[in-house]
Amino acid sequence: MNLTDQGRKVALITGGLGGIGSSCAQLFAEQGYRVIITSRDQRKIDEMSLSNGSEAGSIEGVAVDLNSHDERLKLLERIPTPNVLVNNAGLNIPKPFLEVQPEDFDDVFAVNVKALFFLTQAVIAKMIEEKRAGSIVNISSQAGLTGLFQRTVYCASKHAVEGFTKALAVDLKGYGIRVNNVAPTFVETEMTRATLSQESFRQHIQDKLLLDDLPVAEDIADAVWFLATEHSRSITGTTLKVDAGWTAH
Image (cartoon, rainbow, N blue to C red; front, side):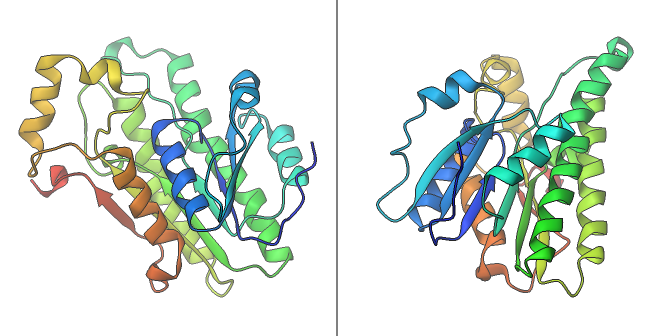
């Protein structure tokens, strides 16, 4: 498959079949973007309706293992250079600290930090080569701003993303490329649904919030859209928290 530019702005969204990713994809398509989403699962990509989106924009899927450096580079040979990169793919393996295994640490950091870092590097190299301004939005987490129970590895990885974003914004001075984070609290998606179905855990979360309800995926997409577009033209190197007040305590 060779995805050629169709004259629209392009948004590349990793993990685009999940709750937050698919909501971001839909919003960008509604606003006229050509949206390219990634997933490891070729079957799900094949089943995805390429008529998704709207009359204004479109959504297309590419199967790629973002943990593979070769596949990351090949991905960017197959698609037009993005105007917007949304680093949404993520992994969490909740465990008590003393039960964490080296492979748990490696798996979480491979997705949440290493793949994000080097995909962003490859995208920015092409953007600079083509003198293309744009925006990078990382889906961080409130876990990058505070500590969460039985999530030492996940918190460590998201704190790394927070630091990476600040440092990258400094490095990109003068290139017209902004980089920011969106940090959600718990959002009910495929990744979190089993945990949130536990009544005691959901009550624990509700007790931490300053608002009545958990954010939904569309709330996160709205924040991503804001940071990705000219609405936030003077914002870079920062984090927009969509946490219903959790971190205000």
